Structure formats: C-alpha cells, structure tokens
Image 1 (cartoon, rainbow, N blue to C red):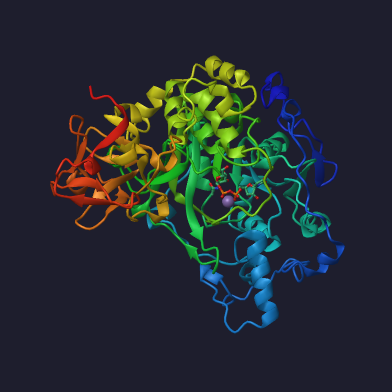
Image 2 (cartoon, helix red, strand yellow; image 1 turned 45 degrees about the vertical axis):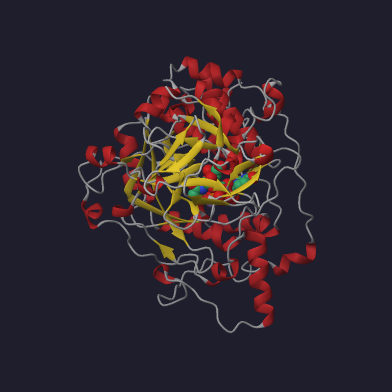
Amino acid sequence: RLAFKNYKSVSSQPPGVHHKYDNKSVVADVPGSQDHEVLPLPRDPVNKSVVADVPGSQGHEVLPLLRDPDGPGEMGKPVKLNNLTQSQQAMVKQGWDKNAFNQYVSDLLSLHRSLPDVRDKECRGIKYLDILPQTSVIVCFHNEAWSVLLRTVHSILDRSPQHLIKEVILVDDFSDQPHLLRQLDDYVTRLPKVRVVRARRREGLIRARLLGASVATATVLTYLDSHCECTEGWLEPLLDRIAQNSTTVVCPVIDVINDDTFEYHFRDSSSLNVGGFDWNLQFNWHGIPDREKKRRKHQWDPVWSPAMAGGLFAIDRTFFETLGTYDSGFDIWGGENLELSFKTWMCHGTLEIVPCSHVGHIFRKRSPYKWRSGVNVLKRNTIRLAEVWLDDYAKYYYQRVGYDLICIGCDHFDLQGDFGDVSSRKKLRKKLKCKSFDWYIKNVYPELFVPGDAVASGEVRNLGEGSTTCLDSPARRDDLYKPVGLYPCHRQGGNQYWMLSKRGEIRRDEACLDFAGQDVILYPCHGSMGNQQWIYNPNNHSIQHGSSRKCLEMAPDKQNVFMKECTNSSLQRWMFQNYNPS
Ligand code: UD2
Ligand code: MN
C-alpha cells in the first residue's frame, strides 16, 4: 500500500505513464488514494451570478504584455490603499474574507511584476554545473485567487532559464471558484509549458502533490505553494545541488510577501533561519546553530536544516519515490513537511536551505479553506507521523498534547482516535534501513530540548488550599511575555505542561519562565540561566528563583502568581507531576 505502487515495477519506464495528456487539462485519481476512504467535502455552492463579480478575473483575459515599470507593487514595493469608495472597501473586505490576504491589492499588480534581485552578490558569480537536470514545477491549489495563482506561474516562467523548466503542472484540488475552471483552462492554452490536472474530489494538498508527481515527466520535482513569487536565479542553485547528489533535498530561502501590501521582504543571508519543530510536532524556525556555522565556509553555502517548512522544495523524483513519497494517508494539510524531513535525514539523504535561491510566499494568519468536519485532520496526520517515525520519542508528543495524561491506563488508541493503518509505512522504513529517531535527534537536531532530559515534567500543582490549581499560561509563541497565571488543573498537557531542565529552566517548548523583578512571564529560552533559573526543592516543595532568591507564591485569588520572600507557607508549595532526578 505505497503511494506509488504502480511505480514499483516500472521504475525503468519513463515517468508519467499514468495519464496521457491529450488535453492540457485532465481529471485524475491520486495513485494510492483508492486505499483510503475519503469522504467528499462539501463544495461551496456555485452561484452563477457570482461569475462576473470575481475581482481580478476581469481584465486578465489577455496576457498583460506591457508592464508599467512604475506600476503598483513593481520591484516588490508595498501598495497602500487610500481614499477607497465604499464599494471598493467592500471588495477589499471580500478579498480578505475569501483568501485571508488582500486580494484587492494583488489584483492591482501586474502578473509579471518585477522584484529586486535579493541574492547575496556572490551568488551571481557562482558557476553552476553546465548541464543541470530539468524540473517539473508542481503548484497545488484549492480556490486560489486568480491574480495570485497566475503571478506564481509567470514568476516561474519569467525568472527561470527556459531549458530547465520541463513543465509547470497546476494541480487543482477540487476548487469550485468559477475562474479556476474554464477560464484557467483557456488561459493556459497560451502557455505551452503549463498544464492543469484536476482532482476528482478534494484530496488535500498532500495527495494533490502526489497527483502532480504522478503526471510529472522531469527528473526533478519542484513544489511551490500557489501564492509564491520566484526571484531571479532561484532555480539553478537548487538544481545544482540535486545534480551533485540526488539524495539532497533542497529548499529556497522563503521570503515574505506581505499579506496586506504585497511588499516583498527579503531575508539576507546573515539573518537566515533553519527549520525545526517542538514536541507538539509543530514546525518552527531557528537561527543557524553554531555547529552549522562552523561547518560552512561562506554565508552563501547551503545550510543543513533539521526540517523544512513544507511548501517550497525540490527533490529528485527517484529519491522521492524511494522514500515512498508522502504518506498518502495524510489528509488535507499538515504533518507532511516533518514526514519528508525525518525521512530525508533518517533514510540517508540531506535536507538543505540554499541561500542563493529566494522565493517569496504569502504567509497567512488563518486558513481560508473548508476543512473536513468531524475529524481533527492535523491530529490524525501527526499521529501517523509519530507512530511511524518517532520510535520511543513518540511519547513526548503524546505527553505534550495530553493524550496519555487524560486517563492513565485507558486504551492508548482510544485517545489517539482512528488514525488508519500505518503498517506499510513502517515496512518501508525497515526496507530502506532508515536510521533511528534517536540518531536524528542527536546528530541532526541536537538543539531540541528532549523531555527525557528534564528533571521534572507535567503539571505544576499548588499544594495550598484545595490543591486544585496549576501553573498555566495561554501565551502562544508569537505573543509570549504575558504574566504566567493559575488555572484549575486539567491533566491535559497543553498550557499546563512544564518541564524543569537540568539547568533549572522551567520550560514549555521553547519558552521559559522568566522573572525580571516584576511579573513572572514566559520568554524565549536563552540558555544562560540568569532570570530563567529556578531551584525546585522537592522536600519543602518551594520553587525559588535563582538570581532574586524569591519564591513562587499563589495569590489569594488563585489566578495569579507572585514572587515573594520565601516563607514556606502552603501558598509557596508546588508539586511537579513527574519528578525524577537522576
Ligand atoms: C505550510 C507550507 C505548505 C504546507 C503546510 C503544511 C510553506 C511556505 N507552506 O503552510 O506548503 O506544507 O505548511 O502542510 O512552506 N492546498 C490544496 N488543498 C488543500 C489545502 C491547501 O491544494 O486542501 C494548497 C494551497 O492552495 C497551497 C498549498 O496547498 O498552495 C499549501 O497550503 P497553505 O498555503 O494553506 O499552507 P501554508 O503555507 O500555511
Ligand atoms: Mn502557503
């Protein structure tokens, strides 16, 4: 039950044998998707009268060949909307509602808008291999805005050497917005290299990517989200790395296209980040670790990254197939980026970010699509990921999300829910003789804090009156710094899952309890003790702050905590759920 089961016996045949392109646009099944029962998602009702109203669909019937070099957004400049009429304001709002970005602004920009050359100047001088492999660029979309989708396509065509682009495959994941149907088919007839493949049902981005791969014919697959803009020189450095070693999986630097103004913000190579994750198995970014800075000679050398963000990467198609592509049991969105990252490293490949390659992406603050109702899709994907790849480390994920704390002793699988069958994925891992997750953590991602190294973990319960109150903070990664408070203990991990590290940090993911004289807040862990050092005394249950020598105390309202002179009152007594110093 592999995603590409048809491929196993035909690896010597030319790829792309599954579907013949008689037309530019085909409707097709995802290989392997037959194995998964997928409930059809409800479509938005197609309201015929809306056809004329799709902003941006007008005026783009003809390729805009003439571009005003001073037009809005050229050179990646921001567009600010002033003095809008009421009906324009209504269109702006409609654009935001539909897309979670400012579609109205996008519609004002040329589909061929210019961008600055954002690379380090050294990148322009690098000599790449004379013969680079061709690539199929695969762009999956579900109800993407017209101007955003086509700007993605044109930026690929306009800023890549023609001979390196074998084709651009647009995979329509069952969109129902009218402009993405006939009008898109018509539009691409004028773009010889561009094809549209349509899924028969909502597959989700993971199976949509597999569908794209199944029709792709080049030796390298390059995936992009449907709201990207490629910059000058983005492609060659990616293909060069793969040409040198087909087990290298490469990502461009992902620049930010502002969701409101469409300004192109580029990240120079001195502020480059690498990808990682926390024990929620959520992807996050980090500065380049020192060990990696040492390994590289130049700022523009490729950077090893423990994980990829997911949407923008290039991979040798044979290596992708060897790795079993994606787990096609993953639904809609999420988890696939870590799956491919773990597999790449554990199954003898390398994952890199290439500083000379820059692609812009619109990061959104919410997901604008319909998700399947009734199932927690992301949780299901993540459990599949943990079960197949994490070995014994899976327990940290379950602890972090609270599945094994709610009812100790009850069936593990009840809490996990039905995550489907993963036996074939495990078999594949065995067959490929992939390394252990322990190897991965120790060698590829040693910066990750491992809960097993914690002195104590779980909830931190106050032992004062009633003993029903726990240390709690709802602060998220992007809004830390709020005072930490108290909340009735719930034993579900989450906001009450703390870890006491050997160094004396009290941490949750990468945030640490921090006291600088005022409130006790969360602050990104800095690893140098100071305001983040805490001393837990298991005998009198006090939590004392290293530098101020004060003790953590529950306020009478049972909602707040203060730092007070240590008195050993019951309000200053705390208990970690698991305490095992060794
Ligand atoms: C990030 C990745 C995204 C994907 C995701 C995790 C980047 C910049 N983006 O979130 O590529 O790896 O993490 O799964 O690395 N789409 C479909 N069908 C769907 C839903 C989405 O085709 O059912 C398309 C969508 O139009 C878009 C792409 O998949 O082109 C990624 O979706 P996203 O942009 O919502 O994901 P993003 O960037 O928040
Ligand atoms: Mn995206």
